[in-house]
Image (tube, rainbow, N blue to C red):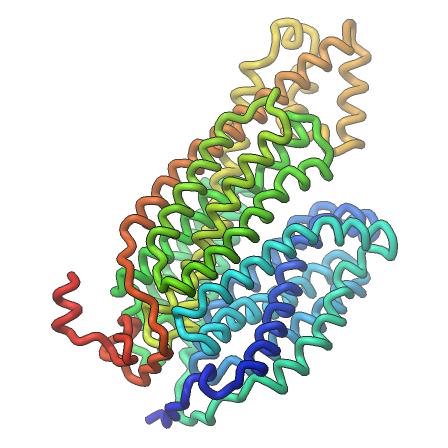
Length: 557
């Protein structure tokens, strides 16, 4: 038997000053984690130049992503059981120590290993920050604060590439990671002082088997998506084996969750209509739209002949739009207690921005792309923070951490899936479009082995490799004209492939809009409504805090 202590909600224990100090500390913590995700990309060329190991470059990001995604649902459940404070402080400390180790890494394999540890810390941070906000404020007030946190993430996305480039060019790439350390020395004392510890709980059983099965299934799926796209191919034994392992361990996880008294993810949550639809919505946004945006810099730098800086400046307005509407939308939700119209409007704007991006081509002015990205960002800002509030409002308070981390988990899985699928679309569409775009003169005058080297759409971005190929072509009769024709075919092929990516993204955006329309608006509670033992896991609470009566639930079906 577990001994549970029913405590007053955290928001009722703290005064307004303590809440605001804690809120700023949480925002600072979020800023650290978000900045790290955007600042590192700028430094990677210098990292590889210093440490070597170019063939391992993708693992600088993959190791972090794997560790972060796996840790999120586990920490969400454990923080529900034992309180947020322990995990939040542990996450910051782990992230900070790992950041210092990454900065001091003597080799790329060591850096990748420390990035995995850093990813665990980052996952713990993201799993607990939003749940702690849910502990501080009732659902009707959470909207504006969730908007602030999404705005913080957007600000980090805007500043990250610039700060990363500045640090790399001045004091060196290692300071891209060292910069996290002083932020932690500010955030940790404030959290220790202002965030109360959870009441002591004894006898609660941790679902180690469920945690293991979910972790293995998640890692296997993510590796299958990453390796299937970039290394082995989708029909390879390695990829198929990983996908099979995903199915086996996911089935084992479901069976374990049915029998364990403290499941990692209570399956009753998936009988909650709002929880399911809201997570499908963020999954679609993560995969269909964020996944597609990943390939926009390739279009800018290849089809538009833009620099890396230009591609960053073109995509930055999306974060600016997200920053604006996340704050405004959060304020509206807090004042009205309603979210359905805002969610539908956001999904429409996101779809409109994606449809606009299906029109881009070789002659598209760069400012047009920026304008389309603004529309996309405005839509994201109205939906993403709103879904955090909607999901938290839809479940019993005792499942707050599980529900909140589930939203982040499904969004990250969606992003990885979208990047993998759209990567296949880019590769296959580009090759066919490139071959179709070659002139008869190029086919007759350039050796087939040389043409094959242009099968990589990012060839021109690899300066040493491109210099060798371009010199080979220029050495031929009429070489300058042949090279210009080949590059023109490449630019148009990349544009064709990216347009197809955004066509598919628009289809997913239409699905996201459908999910938004299927949401049922449940007025946001203006009280915490703690429910120690709901009738079923994950059922919505009544305004007073108890589980909804079965008769009322039946009338809603």
